[in-house]
Length: 344
Image 1 (cartoon, rainbow, N blue to C red):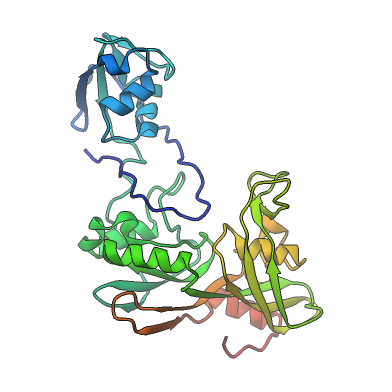
Image 2 (image 1 turned 180 degrees about the vertical axis):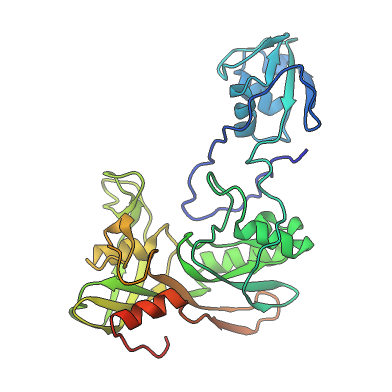
């Protein structure tokens, strides 16, 4: 049976809370090759504790959210009775039987043979050029077919590294470069380097509107959950709403009356940072419906591409600079608007 992956102590910027998985309903008494019965007894320490809290202590190798899923599916029996209520108070000596069944979430971290565009690789790390449409990490609606699954399928060594060595993310519909660690020490080093802003990340964004004013702009505006739409992020006043400081540098490359191609340099890594900051400048990205950018040309996804990644190799000390050319859909969009561009 596959088990949920334990927490690895790493923090992902602005990652949302752990999703819940509906799973398959338990059928008590029915034989199942994937079924494991775990029998435990409530100790005096857990007396009068909530059932879900007691379960988390009695079966510590599984996450509390996973055990709550099993509760909701009728997979937990308390003194020979099916238990459903997480808040039920248990007593010392109570007998608990848990039907441990795999869920989509518990089986998500599995190897898959998926194509990857690897632009650099050595014994310590690799850099991949992620296509638009590829989800980085398993989540509801995308429990398989992710970059993490592809990394696990490509290299058995990735099984020994938390999150298969992924240290930063790109949105599903953003294309471009990502660095991936091949060992825990290198992963820890890259995480520290990103936090210390020692990894340079530059993007190319195609946005609506004629660029006015100076070709170079700096946007320093905190980002938090949009108080009017919880599905979006927004620039916020930290005196009134929770959020985190964010800075993006922008430079106009080419443009016309309809659209502009902008080079974006991240100094922080907030969720949807470039998309939010560009929208705050009244230049929403082409095809970024979440932030007010209408479809345009051939683009069916937000026009954002991570084209340059630069950092000092955490093991060899070598200065690394990797580039990924604009993908076909963004090049076609530039042709559609007759924007001449020869590289970043």
